[in-house]
Structures are given as C-alpha cells and as structure tokens.
Length: 261
Image 1 (cartoon, rainbow, N blue to C red):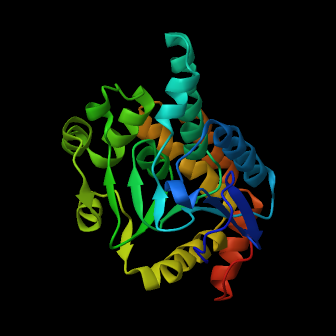
Image 2 (cartoon, rainbow, N blue to C red; image 1 turned 90 degrees about the vertical axis):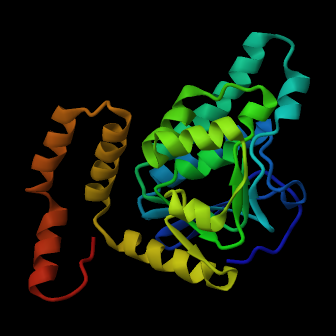
C-alpha cells in the first residue's frame, strides 16, 4: 500500500477482494480528524460491515503519521455552550466505539505517530502493527481535558491500570519499542516490512471462519468491558456446533487443505 500524499479529503475506502482498507487522508495536518470525517467514518464502517465479501478491515493513514487525533480547535470554535462541546466529544467517542464493535476483525496499520484521540481509535482495532519509528502520546492532562470514560476503559482493559495511569496522567511521549513492550503494538517492524506484516495477518484473518470470529470477538470485547451476555455467547457456541462453518472446517482438516468459508 502506498503512502503517497494526495489531495486532502475525508477518509478513503478501498476494497480489494476480502480486504477493506480505510485510509485517513489529511497528510499535511498529520491526518487530524475534522468533524465532517466522523460521519464519513461511520458511513464507511457501515459499508464494510454490510459487504458480505469483506473479511478484514485495515485502518491506516496517508503520509508519515497515522493521525494527530481529533481537531480540538475546531470543536472549540464551533462550541457555544458546554452541551455542544459534550456532543462534539460524544460524536468522536461514538465513532471509536463503533470501530471496536465491528463484526469483522480489524488491523490498525500504524504508518507513523499516533496522538491524542487517535491513540484510542487505534486501540479500538483488534491488532496494531506499527513501524519502529512510531511514537504516541495522550495529552489530555496537559489540555485540561477529562477523557471520555469508554476511552479510559479501553486503555485500562487493553494496557493495564499502571500503563493507563502513566499515559493519561503524565502525558509523556513513548517510542515504538515501549509501545510494543506495554502491549499497545501487536508487532513492530521496519517501515520496509510494514505492508508485508500487515498483509500476512490480514491473509490469516481473511481465511478464518467469519461467523465464528465475529461471535468470539464480540464475547472477548464484552468480557473486557465486564458486560458479557453469557446466554447469547452460549447460543452462538451451540449454533456453531451445527453450522456450515464447522462442517467445512472439519472436512478441510480431514482432507488436509485450507478451509473455504
């Protein structure tokens, strides 16, 4: 995938076979998200979710950064009351939560630095593969901003209490090796190997049973939030035992071939 800059625009969707790619596309501003990008991201997520041929989503950025986060200046300029500021923040939170809840598995291709709210956007993906020159920081404490609760919960459940406190309360930058050490990155690679690593993982995910993955992803996320719908998860488990996917999986295993789901 090329990182060649083009005219700045809202996020761009590309679908190739079983893989969808959403690319943030304001490289001159480090892919900072504008208000109009939020509705577009939700629309693209809906398109990905309803396309039966799409088995995996890759989220990435154009240029040398993944994203500088949400444009807080534009929020402040438009906001004329505390309630409008809250609605703007809630709109970004809703986008991140929608990404986390997508049924298809998601990979964040971290082509560079990740800052502010985009650290949570990336964390909402199932996997994060980043270049070894990447960095991240969460500046909420420097801005006087109390971050929205679902974002804090994601940090805590994905990275642990101590790392969440360190990143939120100190607002210090950390480098790619440290991002890998604390579990923010799934894998770290030199830039020349970024696409190879992403392609490899995307291929694995695209080849697995989509309904089984969708159900297990939902259960894992619910477990992490402390809100598992146990009856629904058990029902999905029982349904899978007599579904078409397991029949094909068992047949492929017996025939020593890759399954065709």
